[in-house]
Image 1 (cartoon, rainbow, N blue to C red):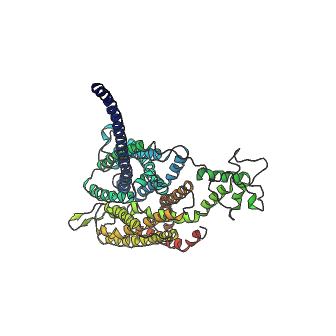
Image 2: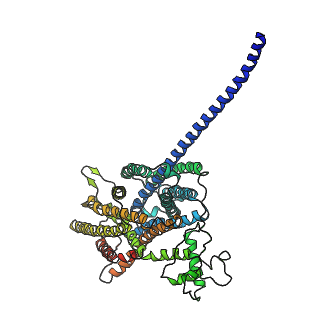
Length: 554
Protein backbone atom coordinates (compact mmCIF):
# COMPACT_ATOMS: atom_id res chain seq x y z
CA UNK A 1 0.00 0.00 0.00
CA UNK A 2 2.79 2.33 0.74
CA UNK A 3 4.27 2.15 -2.73
CA UNK A 4 0.87 2.96 -4.21
CA UNK A 5 0.48 5.83 -1.79
CA UNK A 6 3.92 7.02 -2.71
CA UNK A 7 2.96 6.89 -6.34
CA UNK A 8 -0.09 9.00 -5.66
CA UNK A 9 1.99 11.50 -3.76
CA UNK A 10 4.60 11.48 -6.47
CA UNK A 11 1.87 11.97 -9.03
CA UNK A 12 0.48 14.93 -7.11
CA UNK A 13 3.81 16.65 -6.72
CA UNK A 14 4.23 17.74 -10.36
CA UNK A 15 0.72 19.20 -10.30
CA UNK A 16 1.52 21.36 -7.25
CA UNK A 17 4.79 22.40 -8.77
CA UNK A 18 3.02 23.51 -11.96
CA UNK A 19 0.46 25.52 -10.00
CA UNK A 20 3.17 27.19 -7.98
CA UNK A 21 5.08 27.86 -11.15
CA UNK A 22 2.02 29.48 -12.70
CA UNK A 23 1.43 31.62 -9.60
CA UNK A 24 5.07 32.56 -9.46
CA UNK A 25 5.04 33.35 -13.16
CA UNK A 26 2.01 35.62 -12.80
CA UNK A 27 3.69 37.44 -9.90
CA UNK A 28 6.80 37.88 -12.01
CA UNK A 29 4.66 39.24 -14.85
CA UNK A 30 3.00 41.74 -12.48
CA UNK A 31 6.39 42.82 -11.22
CA UNK A 32 7.66 43.16 -14.77
CA UNK A 33 4.58 45.20 -15.72
CA UNK A 34 5.07 47.50 -12.76
CA UNK A 35 8.73 47.88 -13.61
CA UNK A 36 7.82 48.56 -17.23
CA UNK A 37 5.28 51.21 -16.20
CA UNK A 38 7.79 52.82 -13.88
CA UNK A 39 10.31 52.82 -16.68
CA UNK A 40 7.77 54.39 -19.05
CA UNK A 41 6.92 56.99 -16.40
CA UNK A 42 10.57 57.85 -15.97
CA UNK A 43 10.98 58.03 -19.74
CA UNK A 44 7.94 60.29 -20.08
CA UNK A 45 9.27 62.54 -17.33
CA UNK A 46 12.69 62.64 -18.97
CA UNK A 47 11.11 63.53 -22.30
CA UNK A 48 9.04 66.20 -20.56
CA UNK A 49 12.25 67.70 -19.21
CA UNK A 50 13.64 67.57 -22.74
CA UNK A 51 10.58 69.43 -24.00
CA UNK A 52 10.98 72.23 -21.48
CA UNK A 53 14.75 72.31 -21.99
CA UNK A 54 14.27 72.33 -25.75
CA UNK A 55 11.81 75.19 -25.42
CA UNK A 56 14.35 77.08 -23.33
CA UNK A 57 17.14 76.43 -25.83
CA UNK A 58 15.06 77.65 -28.76
CA UNK A 59 13.96 80.71 -26.79
CA UNK A 60 17.58 81.44 -25.87
CA UNK A 61 18.72 81.00 -29.47
CA UNK A 62 16.15 83.55 -30.58
CA UNK A 63 17.45 85.93 -27.92
CA UNK A 64 20.96 85.44 -29.28
CA UNK A 65 19.88 85.94 -32.89
CA UNK A 66 17.80 89.10 -32.49
CA UNK A 67 20.49 91.30 -30.88
CA UNK A 68 23.10 90.20 -33.42
CA UNK A 69 20.81 90.84 -36.39
CA UNK A 70 20.88 94.64 -36.28
CA UNK A 71 24.68 94.66 -35.97
CA UNK A 72 24.95 92.18 -38.86
CA UNK A 73 22.83 94.38 -41.12
CA UNK A 74 24.75 97.57 -40.33
CA UNK A 75 28.27 96.08 -40.31
CA UNK A 76 28.00 93.56 -43.18
CA UNK A 77 25.11 94.71 -45.34
CA UNK A 78 26.01 98.38 -44.62
CA UNK A 79 22.37 99.33 -44.25
CA UNK A 80 21.41 102.64 -42.76
CA UNK A 81 20.47 102.89 -39.11
CA UNK A 82 16.73 103.15 -39.75
CA UNK A 83 16.58 100.46 -42.46
CA UNK A 84 18.36 97.89 -40.29
CA UNK A 85 16.18 98.73 -37.30
CA UNK A 86 13.07 98.51 -39.47
CA UNK A 87 13.88 94.98 -40.63
CA UNK A 88 14.57 93.80 -37.08
CA UNK A 89 11.42 95.46 -35.71
CA UNK A 90 9.17 93.89 -38.35
CA UNK A 91 10.75 90.50 -37.69
CA UNK A 92 10.46 90.75 -33.92
CA UNK A 93 6.94 92.20 -34.01
CA UNK A 94 5.71 89.49 -36.36
CA UNK A 95 6.86 86.81 -33.92
CA UNK A 96 4.54 88.37 -31.30
CA UNK A 97 1.53 88.63 -33.61
CA UNK A 98 1.70 85.16 -35.20
CA UNK A 99 0.75 83.21 -32.00
CA UNK A 100 -2.83 84.35 -32.64
CA UNK A 101 -2.79 82.44 -35.94
CA UNK A 102 -1.15 79.42 -34.32
CA UNK A 103 -3.81 79.36 -31.58
CA UNK A 104 -6.50 79.38 -34.26
CA UNK A 105 -4.68 76.61 -36.12
CA UNK A 106 -4.51 74.47 -32.98
CA UNK A 107 -8.25 74.91 -32.42
CA UNK A 108 -9.32 74.09 -35.96
CA UNK A 109 -6.82 71.70 -37.56
CA UNK A 110 -4.18 70.50 -35.10
CA UNK A 111 -3.61 70.11 -31.38
CA UNK A 112 -1.02 71.95 -29.30
CA UNK A 113 1.99 69.70 -29.75
CA UNK A 114 1.85 69.26 -33.55
CA UNK A 115 1.62 73.04 -33.96
CA UNK A 116 4.63 73.60 -31.71
CA UNK A 117 6.60 70.79 -33.37
CA UNK A 118 5.87 72.24 -36.80
CA UNK A 119 6.98 75.72 -35.73
CA UNK A 120 10.15 74.30 -34.16
CA UNK A 121 11.10 72.49 -37.36
CA UNK A 122 10.41 75.67 -39.32
CA UNK A 123 12.64 77.65 -36.93
CA UNK A 124 15.47 75.14 -37.35
CA UNK A 125 15.25 75.42 -41.13
CA UNK A 126 15.20 79.20 -40.88
CA UNK A 127 18.27 79.33 -38.65
CA UNK A 128 20.09 77.04 -41.08
CA UNK A 129 19.18 79.29 -44.02
CA UNK A 130 20.38 82.30 -42.04
CA UNK A 131 23.79 80.69 -41.57
CA UNK A 132 23.95 79.77 -45.26
CA UNK A 133 23.04 83.32 -46.32
CA UNK A 134 26.31 84.73 -44.95
CA UNK A 135 28.77 85.68 -47.73
CA UNK A 136 31.44 83.07 -46.93
CA UNK A 137 29.24 79.94 -47.08
CA UNK A 138 27.91 79.88 -50.65
CA UNK A 139 30.45 82.15 -52.31
CA UNK A 140 31.87 79.32 -54.46
CA UNK A 141 28.42 78.28 -55.70
CA UNK A 142 27.05 81.77 -56.34
CA UNK A 143 30.24 83.21 -57.83
CA UNK A 144 30.43 86.02 -55.28
CA UNK A 145 33.26 87.04 -52.98
CA UNK A 146 33.48 85.73 -49.42
CA UNK A 147 34.24 88.96 -47.56
CA UNK A 148 31.75 90.50 -45.14
CA UNK A 149 30.95 93.33 -47.52
CA UNK A 150 27.67 94.30 -49.21
CA UNK A 151 29.07 93.65 -52.70
CA UNK A 152 29.63 90.01 -51.67
CA UNK A 153 25.94 89.46 -50.95
CA UNK A 154 24.21 88.25 -54.09
CA UNK A 155 20.58 87.73 -54.98
CA UNK A 156 20.62 84.14 -53.68
CA UNK A 157 21.94 85.20 -50.29
CA UNK A 158 19.33 87.95 -50.02
CA UNK A 159 16.47 85.57 -50.81
CA UNK A 160 17.76 83.05 -48.28
CA UNK A 161 18.19 85.76 -45.65
CA UNK A 162 14.67 87.17 -45.84
CA UNK A 163 13.19 83.66 -46.11
CA UNK A 164 15.07 82.71 -42.95
CA UNK A 165 13.65 85.71 -41.10
CA UNK A 166 10.10 84.70 -42.03
CA UNK A 167 10.65 81.08 -40.96
CA UNK A 168 12.33 82.09 -37.71
CA UNK A 169 9.44 84.44 -36.89
CA UNK A 170 7.06 81.47 -37.17
CA UNK A 171 9.35 79.37 -34.98
CA UNK A 172 9.69 82.00 -32.25
CA UNK A 173 5.93 82.53 -32.26
CA UNK A 174 5.48 78.78 -31.76
CA UNK A 175 7.51 78.91 -28.56
CA UNK A 176 5.45 81.86 -27.30
CA UNK A 177 2.26 80.01 -28.22
CA UNK A 178 3.22 76.85 -26.32
CA UNK A 179 4.31 78.86 -23.27
CA UNK A 180 0.86 80.42 -23.04
CA UNK A 181 -0.86 77.06 -23.50
CA UNK A 182 1.22 75.46 -20.75
CA UNK A 183 0.55 78.32 -18.36
CA UNK A 184 -3.21 78.24 -18.90
CA UNK A 185 -4.05 74.57 -19.16
CA UNK A 186 -1.34 73.21 -16.84
CA UNK A 187 -1.19 70.11 -18.97
CA UNK A 188 0.63 66.90 -18.16
CA UNK A 189 4.18 68.21 -18.50
CA UNK A 190 3.72 70.87 -15.86
CA UNK A 191 1.81 68.50 -13.59
CA UNK A 192 4.76 66.14 -13.64
CA UNK A 193 7.26 68.96 -13.27
CA UNK A 194 5.98 71.50 -10.73
CA UNK A 195 9.40 73.13 -10.58
CA UNK A 196 9.69 73.51 -14.34
CA UNK A 197 9.85 77.32 -14.08
CA UNK A 198 12.88 77.07 -11.80
CA UNK A 199 14.39 74.46 -14.11
CA UNK A 200 13.92 76.74 -17.10
CA UNK A 201 15.38 79.67 -15.12
CA UNK A 202 18.53 77.71 -14.22
CA UNK A 203 18.94 76.50 -17.80
CA UNK A 204 18.45 80.03 -19.09
CA UNK A 205 21.05 81.52 -16.73
CA UNK A 206 23.62 78.91 -17.75
CA UNK A 207 22.81 79.41 -21.42
CA UNK A 208 22.91 83.20 -21.08
CA UNK A 209 26.45 83.23 -19.75
CA UNK A 210 27.50 80.62 -22.30
CA UNK A 211 25.95 82.60 -25.13
CA UNK A 212 27.59 85.83 -23.98
CA UNK A 213 31.01 84.19 -23.92
CA UNK A 214 30.29 82.52 -27.26
CA UNK A 215 29.46 85.84 -28.93
CA UNK A 216 32.71 87.37 -27.70
CA UNK A 217 34.93 84.51 -28.88
CA UNK A 218 33.35 83.56 -32.22
CA UNK A 219 33.87 86.25 -34.86
CA UNK A 220 32.83 84.79 -38.29
CA UNK A 221 29.16 85.42 -38.93
CA UNK A 222 28.74 82.01 -40.52
CA UNK A 223 29.73 80.40 -37.21
CA UNK A 224 27.74 82.87 -35.10
CA UNK A 225 24.61 81.72 -36.91
CA UNK A 226 25.74 78.18 -37.75
CA UNK A 227 26.61 76.94 -34.25
CA UNK A 228 23.19 77.94 -32.83
CA UNK A 229 21.62 76.10 -35.79
CA UNK A 230 23.38 72.90 -34.70
CA UNK A 231 22.10 73.29 -31.14
CA UNK A 232 18.64 73.95 -32.54
CA UNK A 233 18.74 70.66 -34.45
CA UNK A 234 19.51 68.85 -31.19
CA UNK A 235 16.68 70.64 -29.39
CA UNK A 236 14.29 69.78 -32.21
CA UNK A 237 15.26 66.11 -31.89
CA UNK A 238 14.33 66.21 -28.21
CA UNK A 239 10.98 67.78 -29.04
CA UNK A 240 10.28 65.14 -31.71
CA UNK A 241 10.95 62.41 -29.13
CA UNK A 242 8.69 64.14 -26.64
CA UNK A 243 5.94 64.49 -29.22
CA UNK A 244 6.11 60.78 -30.06
CA UNK A 245 5.93 59.89 -26.36
CA UNK A 246 2.92 62.13 -25.71
CA UNK A 247 1.07 61.70 -28.99
CA UNK A 248 -1.18 58.98 -27.57
CA UNK A 249 -1.87 60.70 -24.27
CA UNK A 250 -2.67 64.16 -25.64
CA UNK A 251 -5.80 63.82 -27.79
CA UNK A 252 -7.18 66.87 -29.54
CA UNK A 253 -9.72 68.66 -27.36
CA UNK A 254 -12.94 69.72 -28.99
CA UNK A 255 -14.35 73.00 -27.79
CA UNK A 256 -18.18 72.96 -27.93
CA UNK A 257 -18.29 76.76 -27.75
CA UNK A 258 -16.10 77.32 -30.80
CA UNK A 259 -13.01 79.49 -30.89
CA UNK A 260 -13.14 83.19 -30.12
CA UNK A 261 -11.96 84.40 -33.53
CA UNK A 262 -14.70 82.52 -35.39
CA UNK A 263 -17.38 83.64 -32.93
CA UNK A 264 -16.29 87.28 -33.27
CA UNK A 265 -16.40 87.05 -37.06
CA UNK A 266 -19.89 85.53 -36.88
CA UNK A 267 -21.12 88.32 -34.59
CA UNK A 268 -19.77 91.04 -36.89
CA UNK A 269 -21.26 89.41 -39.99
CA UNK A 270 -24.63 88.74 -38.34
CA UNK A 271 -24.89 92.28 -36.91
CA UNK A 272 -24.04 93.73 -40.33
CA UNK A 273 -26.64 91.47 -41.97
CA UNK A 274 -29.32 92.71 -39.53
CA UNK A 275 -28.21 96.35 -39.39
CA UNK A 276 -31.69 97.53 -40.42
CA UNK A 277 -33.50 95.43 -37.80
CA UNK A 278 -34.91 97.08 -34.69
CA UNK A 279 -33.65 95.90 -31.31
CA UNK A 280 -36.27 94.53 -28.89
CA UNK A 281 -37.02 96.57 -25.78
CA UNK A 282 -36.43 93.54 -23.57
CA UNK A 283 -32.91 91.99 -23.92
CA UNK A 284 -34.42 88.69 -22.77
CA UNK A 285 -35.91 88.35 -26.26
CA UNK A 286 -32.43 88.02 -27.73
CA UNK A 287 -31.27 84.53 -28.64
CA UNK A 288 -29.40 82.38 -26.13
CA UNK A 289 -28.93 78.62 -26.42
CA UNK A 290 -30.13 77.59 -22.95
CA UNK A 291 -30.40 73.91 -23.86
CA UNK A 292 -26.64 73.37 -23.57
CA UNK A 293 -26.09 73.96 -19.89
CA UNK A 294 -22.49 72.77 -20.03
CA UNK A 295 -21.50 75.77 -22.14
CA UNK A 296 -20.22 78.89 -20.41
CA UNK A 297 -22.73 81.75 -20.70
CA UNK A 298 -22.54 85.52 -20.19
CA UNK A 299 -25.29 87.93 -19.23
CA UNK A 300 -26.34 90.82 -21.44
CA UNK A 301 -24.63 94.16 -20.79
CA UNK A 302 -25.51 97.67 -22.02
CA UNK A 303 -23.36 99.42 -24.57
CA UNK A 304 -22.31 98.51 -28.11
CA UNK A 305 -25.98 97.83 -28.84
CA UNK A 306 -25.38 97.47 -32.56
CA UNK A 307 -23.70 94.14 -31.85
CA UNK A 308 -26.87 92.92 -30.09
CA UNK A 309 -28.54 92.78 -33.49
CA UNK A 310 -26.59 89.60 -34.18
CA UNK A 311 -28.80 87.88 -31.55
CA UNK A 312 -32.14 89.08 -32.96
CA UNK A 313 -34.30 86.08 -33.82
CA UNK A 314 -36.04 86.50 -37.16
CA UNK A 315 -39.10 84.40 -38.07
CA UNK A 316 -38.26 80.76 -38.86
CA UNK A 317 -34.58 81.32 -38.02
CA UNK A 318 -32.44 78.75 -36.23
CA UNK A 319 -28.77 78.96 -35.37
CA UNK A 320 -28.16 75.40 -36.49
CA UNK A 321 -29.13 76.36 -40.02
CA UNK A 322 -26.81 79.38 -40.30
CA UNK A 323 -24.54 80.40 -37.44
CA UNK A 324 -23.36 83.39 -39.46
CA UNK A 325 -26.79 85.05 -39.26
CA UNK A 326 -27.86 84.23 -35.70
CA UNK A 327 -25.51 84.36 -32.70
CA UNK A 328 -26.05 83.86 -29.00
CA UNK A 329 -25.95 86.59 -26.37
CA UNK A 330 -22.81 84.95 -24.97
CA UNK A 331 -21.04 85.23 -28.31
CA UNK A 332 -22.10 88.87 -28.58
CA UNK A 333 -20.83 89.62 -25.06
CA UNK A 334 -17.49 87.96 -25.81
CA UNK A 335 -17.10 90.24 -28.81
CA UNK A 336 -18.02 93.25 -26.68
CA UNK A 337 -15.42 92.33 -24.05
CA UNK A 338 -12.68 92.23 -26.68
CA UNK A 339 -13.71 95.57 -28.19
CA UNK A 340 -13.79 97.18 -24.73
CA UNK A 341 -10.19 96.16 -24.11
CA UNK A 342 -8.92 97.97 -27.22
CA UNK A 343 -8.03 101.18 -25.27
CA UNK A 344 -6.02 99.06 -22.86
CA UNK A 345 -4.27 97.32 -25.76
CA UNK A 346 -3.09 100.76 -26.88
CA UNK A 347 -1.01 100.88 -23.70
CA UNK A 348 0.42 97.47 -24.60
CA UNK A 349 1.23 98.84 -28.05
CA UNK A 350 3.30 101.61 -26.47
CA UNK A 351 5.18 99.01 -24.38
CA UNK A 352 6.03 97.18 -27.59
CA UNK A 353 7.19 100.44 -29.17
CA UNK A 354 9.64 101.09 -26.32
CA UNK A 355 10.85 97.48 -26.30
CA UNK A 356 11.58 97.72 -30.02
CA UNK A 357 14.47 100.13 -29.42
CA UNK A 358 16.23 97.63 -27.15
CA UNK A 359 17.43 95.24 -29.88
CA UNK A 360 18.07 98.03 -32.37
CA UNK A 361 19.13 101.53 -31.33
CA UNK A 362 20.35 100.59 -27.85
CA UNK A 363 22.68 97.96 -29.30
CA UNK A 364 23.85 100.29 -32.04
CA UNK A 365 24.88 102.72 -29.32
CA UNK A 366 26.87 99.95 -27.63
CA UNK A 367 28.46 98.76 -30.87
CA UNK A 368 31.11 101.53 -30.97
CA UNK A 369 31.45 102.33 -27.27
CA UNK A 370 34.37 101.20 -25.11
CA UNK A 371 33.64 97.54 -24.19
CA UNK A 372 36.49 97.10 -21.71
CA UNK A 373 35.97 96.32 -18.05
CA UNK A 374 39.45 96.47 -16.58
CA UNK A 375 41.53 94.04 -18.61
CA UNK A 376 38.48 92.19 -19.92
CA UNK A 377 36.42 92.95 -23.02
CA UNK A 378 32.64 92.67 -22.71
CA UNK A 379 30.82 91.22 -25.77
CA UNK A 380 27.90 93.15 -27.18
CA UNK A 381 25.44 90.44 -26.07
CA UNK A 382 26.30 91.27 -22.46
CA UNK A 383 23.64 93.99 -22.45
CA UNK A 384 20.64 92.04 -23.86
CA UNK A 385 21.55 89.08 -21.65
CA UNK A 386 21.60 91.42 -18.65
CA UNK A 387 18.17 92.65 -19.72
CA UNK A 388 16.82 89.09 -19.92
CA UNK A 389 18.33 88.14 -16.55
CA UNK A 390 16.81 91.20 -14.88
CA UNK A 391 13.47 90.35 -16.45
CA UNK A 392 13.72 86.78 -15.16
CA UNK A 393 14.79 87.92 -11.69
CA UNK A 394 11.85 90.30 -11.27
CA UNK A 395 9.38 87.69 -12.55
CA UNK A 396 10.57 85.21 -9.88
CA UNK A 397 11.15 87.66 -7.01
CA UNK A 398 8.40 90.27 -6.93
CA UNK A 399 5.03 89.94 -5.23
CA UNK A 400 1.69 89.50 -6.91
CA UNK A 401 -0.24 92.74 -7.40
CA UNK A 402 -3.48 93.53 -9.26
CA UNK A 403 -3.13 93.63 -13.03
CA UNK A 404 -3.74 97.41 -13.36
CA UNK A 405 -0.76 98.02 -11.07
CA UNK A 406 1.47 95.97 -13.36
CA UNK A 407 0.26 97.80 -16.46
CA UNK A 408 0.80 101.24 -14.94
CA UNK A 409 4.21 100.16 -13.60
CA UNK A 410 5.29 98.95 -17.04
CA UNK A 411 4.39 102.34 -18.55
CA UNK A 412 6.25 104.18 -15.77
CA UNK A 413 9.34 102.04 -16.30
CA UNK A 414 9.16 102.73 -20.03
CA UNK A 415 9.26 106.47 -19.27
CA UNK A 416 12.27 105.99 -16.97
CA UNK A 417 13.99 103.83 -19.57
CA UNK A 418 13.58 106.41 -22.35
CA UNK A 419 14.54 109.31 -20.07
CA UNK A 420 17.78 107.63 -19.01
CA UNK A 421 18.50 106.56 -22.60
CA UNK A 422 18.08 110.16 -23.78
CA UNK A 423 20.50 111.45 -21.13
CA UNK A 424 23.10 108.78 -21.96
CA UNK A 425 22.80 109.43 -25.70
CA UNK A 426 23.26 113.15 -25.16
CA UNK A 427 26.48 112.46 -23.26
CA UNK A 428 27.61 110.04 -26.00
CA UNK A 429 27.09 112.70 -28.66
CA UNK A 430 29.03 115.16 -26.51
CA UNK A 431 31.98 112.73 -26.43
CA UNK A 432 31.75 112.29 -30.20
CA UNK A 433 32.06 116.02 -30.80
CA UNK A 434 34.77 116.33 -28.17
CA UNK A 435 37.01 113.77 -29.91
CA UNK A 436 35.99 114.78 -33.47
CA UNK A 437 34.36 111.42 -34.30
CA UNK A 438 31.24 112.78 -35.99
CA UNK A 439 32.19 111.43 -39.43
CA UNK A 440 34.06 108.37 -38.14
CA UNK A 441 31.26 105.87 -37.38
CA UNK A 442 33.67 102.92 -37.22
CA UNK A 443 35.89 104.46 -34.53
CA UNK A 444 35.58 103.53 -30.86
CA UNK A 445 34.14 106.21 -28.60
CA UNK A 446 36.08 106.70 -25.34
CA UNK A 447 32.94 106.16 -23.27
CA UNK A 448 32.30 102.95 -21.35
CA UNK A 449 29.52 100.66 -22.55
CA UNK A 450 28.49 100.31 -18.89
CA UNK A 451 26.73 103.67 -19.24
CA UNK A 452 23.99 101.72 -21.05
CA UNK A 453 23.35 99.31 -18.16
CA UNK A 454 20.63 101.44 -16.44
CA UNK A 455 18.46 101.71 -19.55
CA UNK A 456 18.67 97.96 -20.15
CA UNK A 457 17.85 97.45 -16.46
CA UNK A 458 14.63 99.46 -16.73
CA UNK A 459 13.85 97.83 -20.07
CA UNK A 460 13.91 94.47 -18.28
CA UNK A 461 11.66 95.88 -15.55
CA UNK A 462 9.24 97.12 -18.21
CA UNK A 463 9.06 93.73 -19.92
CA UNK A 464 8.72 91.85 -16.64
CA UNK A 465 5.77 93.91 -15.41
CA UNK A 466 4.18 93.79 -18.85
CA UNK A 467 4.29 89.98 -18.92
CA UNK A 468 2.81 89.76 -15.43
CA UNK A 469 0.04 92.21 -16.27
CA UNK A 470 -0.97 90.11 -19.27
CA UNK A 471 -1.07 86.93 -17.16
CA UNK A 472 -3.28 88.45 -14.43
CA UNK A 473 -5.37 90.90 -16.41
CA UNK A 474 -8.14 88.51 -17.41
CA UNK A 475 -10.09 86.77 -14.61
CA UNK A 476 -9.97 83.02 -14.09
CA UNK A 477 -13.73 82.76 -14.70
CA UNK A 478 -13.19 83.24 -18.44
CA UNK A 479 -12.98 79.85 -20.21
CA UNK A 480 -9.46 78.85 -21.18
CA UNK A 481 -10.49 78.61 -24.83
CA UNK A 482 -11.33 82.33 -24.75
CA UNK A 483 -8.72 83.54 -22.28
CA UNK A 484 -5.79 82.31 -24.35
CA UNK A 485 -6.91 84.46 -27.28
CA UNK A 486 -7.11 87.54 -25.05
CA UNK A 487 -3.55 86.89 -23.86
CA UNK A 488 -2.38 86.41 -27.44
CA UNK A 489 -4.19 89.64 -28.38
CA UNK A 490 -2.29 91.48 -25.63
CA UNK A 491 1.06 90.15 -26.87
CA UNK A 492 -0.05 90.86 -30.43
CA UNK A 493 -0.73 94.47 -29.45
CA UNK A 494 2.83 94.66 -28.17
CA UNK A 495 3.98 93.20 -31.49
CA UNK A 496 2.01 95.86 -33.36
CA UNK A 497 3.87 98.46 -31.31
CA UNK A 498 7.19 96.86 -32.23
CA UNK A 499 6.32 96.89 -35.93
CA UNK A 500 4.89 100.37 -35.47
CA UNK A 501 8.34 101.50 -34.39
CA UNK A 502 9.18 101.65 -38.10
CA UNK A 503 6.29 104.04 -38.74
CA UNK A 504 7.12 105.99 -35.58
CA UNK A 505 10.67 106.64 -36.76
CA UNK A 506 9.44 107.74 -40.18
CA UNK A 507 6.77 110.10 -38.81
CA UNK A 508 9.01 111.62 -36.14
CA UNK A 509 11.77 112.05 -38.72
CA UNK A 510 9.46 113.87 -41.12
CA UNK A 511 8.13 116.12 -38.37
CA UNK A 512 11.67 116.92 -37.22
CA UNK A 513 12.50 118.18 -40.72
CA UNK A 514 10.09 121.07 -40.17
CA UNK A 515 12.43 122.66 -37.66
CA UNK A 516 15.70 121.64 -39.29
CA UNK A 517 17.54 118.43 -40.16
CA UNK A 518 15.98 114.97 -39.86
CA UNK A 519 16.80 113.37 -36.51
CA UNK A 520 17.58 110.03 -38.21
CA UNK A 521 20.64 110.19 -40.43
CA UNK A 522 22.52 107.41 -42.21
CA UNK A 523 24.91 106.88 -39.29
CA UNK A 524 24.27 106.84 -35.57
CA UNK A 525 26.81 109.60 -34.89
CA UNK A 526 24.94 112.00 -37.17
CA UNK A 527 21.52 111.13 -35.76
CA UNK A 528 19.76 112.67 -32.77
CA UNK A 529 18.38 109.64 -31.00
CA UNK A 530 18.30 111.58 -27.74
CA UNK A 531 15.46 113.72 -29.07
CA UNK A 532 13.58 110.63 -30.23
CA UNK A 533 13.94 109.11 -26.75
CA UNK A 534 12.61 112.32 -25.20
CA UNK A 535 9.62 112.10 -27.55
CA UNK A 536 8.90 108.54 -26.39
CA UNK A 537 9.20 109.69 -22.77
CA UNK A 538 6.59 112.38 -23.36
CA UNK A 539 4.25 109.88 -25.04
CA UNK A 540 4.71 107.49 -22.11
CA UNK A 541 3.91 110.20 -19.59
CA UNK A 542 0.77 111.08 -21.55
CA UNK A 543 -0.16 107.40 -21.59
CA UNK A 544 0.17 107.24 -17.79
CA UNK A 545 -2.20 110.19 -17.39
CA UNK A 546 -5.00 108.67 -19.45
CA UNK A 547 -4.34 105.06 -18.44
CA UNK A 548 -7.13 104.91 -15.85
CA UNK A 549 -9.84 105.10 -18.53
CA UNK A 550 -9.25 101.60 -19.99
CA UNK A 551 -9.53 100.00 -16.55
CA UNK A 552 -12.81 101.69 -15.75
CA UNK A 553 -14.54 99.32 -18.17
CA UNK A 554 -12.88 96.13 -16.92
